[in-house]
Amino acid sequence: MSEEIKVLIVDDHPVFRQGLCDVIETDPALKVVGEAADGEVAIEKAHETQPDVILMDINLPTINGLQVTRKIKSQMPDVRVIMITGYDDAEQVFHALRAGASAYCPKDITPEALTNIIHAVYEGSYVVGEKRMNYDELMQWIEQKVGRFAGPLDSDAEEMFVPLSPREMEILEHVTRGLSNKEIAYKLGISHQTVKNHMTAILRKLRVDDRTQAAVYALRHGWVRLEGSR
Image (cartoon, rainbow, N blue to C red; front, side, top):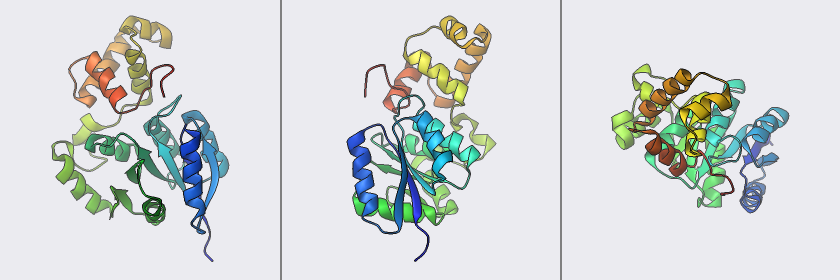
């Protein structure tokens, strides 16, 4: 028998994590090597367990799934990441792919479809909405779905849809909690002008007009969670 595909599960809901474990155990070719309930632990576990595939929720405590994916992929480029999320829209798919994910699927996916996706990404394919594609087909799919900001994932021309940098994401989090630029500057130990520069970049990348719209965007996509919310 060929080697088992090692899977790491990252989700902060214990019942959902257990459900994913149960699904993976139905396939003898797959093996759960670890679980994490937040972004920081996920990064540690990825280094510890060296998984082949990570099932990643976007809406996580500490660091969101997009940031975690980018960080893990920069350190472990061969790991395949499948985003599993309740926030299903074309722009979110694009953000996930930009961050380094190989697949994107909703939380109500069937067990059989999920195990198929794990095998597909392990073999190097991309999967969105249960459609299996190679890189060129993925580019065509993006162009059809979200033509106004499509293009190669590494294209400079699409600079406005590059994901937010870790620092920008951090600043956006503070914005959603109602902090002013001055307060953010003090909290992060950077200059007021630096915060303003980051805010300009955030608004441009998210294509919104002001900080309120940026905060709404972050909350709507599950990038930031308000204290005490789940």
